[in-house]
Length: 233
Image (tube, rainbow, N blue to C red; front, side):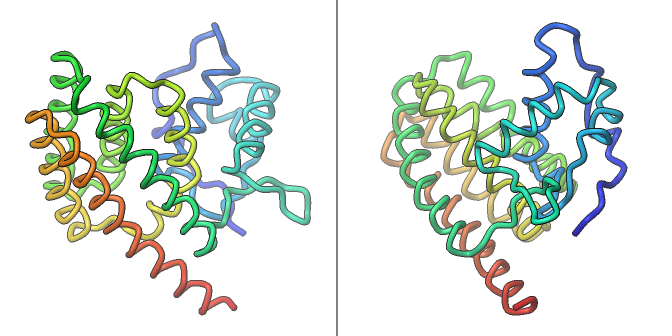
């Protein structure tokens, strides 16, 4: 089991007083999505509360919610840890992601507003800069924003929220298994194709580019999960 590392600089600006419970939940979900939390990492409500500068109550409530949503799991010692993804569980999540994200992308191609296109283009540039620098943490943060902006442009908030939940579950495994300069370069080629299809309003092309991006990363992640199971089992 892993102890909670010092992550204070990654938690961002101080939290506002209003809707504190929701803010804590969203902050923790973001850190799962972008791999700030690692697979198997033990999460302590007391430690997280200190890092976030809040009382333990909203943190405990957020952790309970994240457990119910499948991102965290209760260990035999009654502690909470980031879910350890098995290869079979990863296959399930990937299959659902391919369907839902493909659907959202194809819709977005025909519905994205000029403002949405401008935002997605800006995020693409930031993503390319992070890849060029080899900044893995920034790359994963921008990657999540880039994809989320595309799916939000579909105009279906329920679909977008379902996708966000899947990203939250798989995010720690993505961070632990994939990102390095070579992976980022391959991924950026897919992102270039995504942006080009979006600008053309090409729904099938956008779906294909998104599926290629997910599929190529999934192959590497699953290979790593399988190898780690062999090492430990």
